[in-house]
Image (cartoon, rainbow over all chains, first blue to last red; front, side, top):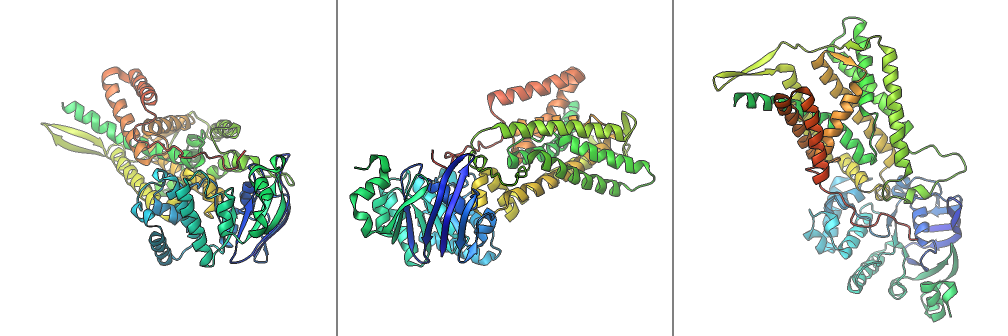
Length: 238
Length: 319
C-alpha cells in the first residue's frame, strides 16, 4: 500500500534520511524501531508532506506523493498522529476532532463519526467541551488518534504514541492500536517500546542513523542482540 | 455629574472605533505571530486612492467606500507576499530546517517585522507623491447631524456620524467574533493560531489560508479607515501612523489575539482619552494613555487575553 524507495531528506547540509526504503502493506501494522536520532520522526514528517525529501519515491496506492503538499497528502488518505500528540490546546476536544475532519464536507457523517469516537473513548466524551490543553497525556493521545482518524484515512501513521505516558496508559493505547488493526486499518507505527510493538505489529524495520538496517517479523526480533540495537543503537550493542 | 456622562459616552463611542482598528491588527498577529507594521499604511494609501477618485468628480460615498476596501485588499496582498508569505524557494534548495524550528522568536520574525516597517515607509511615500497637499479632503458624512438626548435637565450631544460608526463597529466585531468561534473557516484560523504544523496535518492549506485572511483583514482596515476619515473629512499621510498607534494600543491593552480583549482595550483607550482630556488637556491625554498602557503591560500582559501557553514543547523532531 505504501512503498518508499531510497528516500532522502536533509536539514540544510545534514542528511537525516540517507536513502530509506520500506513497504507497509494494507491491513497490517508495520513498525519502525530505532534509537533516538535515527531519523524515524523525520521519515514520518517526510511522508506527511511537512518536510520535503530531495530524493526518492513515496508511492501510496500506486500514486507518487513525493513533493506533494501536506494538504494533498491528507486528502489522499494518509494521516499522521504526530509525536507529542500536538493537539490544539486552546480548542475543545470536539473542536480538535472537527479540525481533523477539515477536508470533509459531509457534516452529518462527521457528527456520526464524532459520536462513534466518543463511544470508543468514553473519557473523551466526558471532556467534550473541555480545552484539549487541560487533558492528561493519555487522553491527549486518544484525542490525537481520534483526530487523525476523523479524516477517514486509508493508512494511519503513528509517531511514538507511547512516549511520555504511564505504563498503564501505554497498554491502553496499544489496545486501541490492536483494535484498529482488527478493524482493518493499515498502520505504520514508529515506536521505541519494542515489547509493546512486538505484540501488535506483523512486520518490523530497524532504523539507525538515517537508513534501514534490518527488516523482518516479530519472531526474528526475539534475538536480544537486535533488541539492544533497537533501543541503544549500534555502538552500544554487545 | 452630567459632564461625566457626556464625557464617558464620547469615550465609549471613540472606544468602539478604536476596537475595530485594533481588531484587524490583533487578528493578523494571532495568525501570523508577527506584527504587521504596515497595517495603518495600507489603509491610509487605500484612503488616498479613494480621495483621489473623489477629486475627479461627483462620486457616491458608497462607491468610494468600495474602492477603498478593494484597493486595501490589493495592497494587503502586496504587503503579505513581500513581508509575511513563505519565501519563494530557490529551485533545487529545500529549506526543511525552518519548518520544525517552531519555538520562540527567530530571525525570520524580525526580518518580517523590519520588512513591514520598510514597506510602511514606501506606502507612505507613495501617498505623499499621489496627492499634492499635506492635508487632503476626504468625502465626509454630514457633520452637523446630531442626536440630542435630554438628561438631568440638560442635553447630551452625540454626533450622528460618530454614533453610527461606533454602532457599526460593534456590530462588525460581533459578527467577526461569531465567525471565528462558529464557522469551519474560523476553526481553521484558530487552529493555525494554536499550532501551524499540526494545522498542516489536518489538511489545511496554511499558506493560502493566511494570504486570504491577510487580504480580508486589509480590506477590513480599509473600511475602518473610510469610516473614520468620513467623520474627519480629511486625510493626511500620517493617518497610517495614527491608525497603527491606536490599533496597537487598543490591542495590547486587551491582549493581542483576543477579540473580547480588543473590545475591552478599545473601550479603555477611548474612556481614558476622554477623561484625561477633561482633566489634563491634550498633552495630558497622550500621557495618560501611555501610562495606562505601561501599567497594563507591566502588571499583566493584557487584561482579557487568555494566556495561550503551549502545553507541550513545539519542537517535534527529537535531537
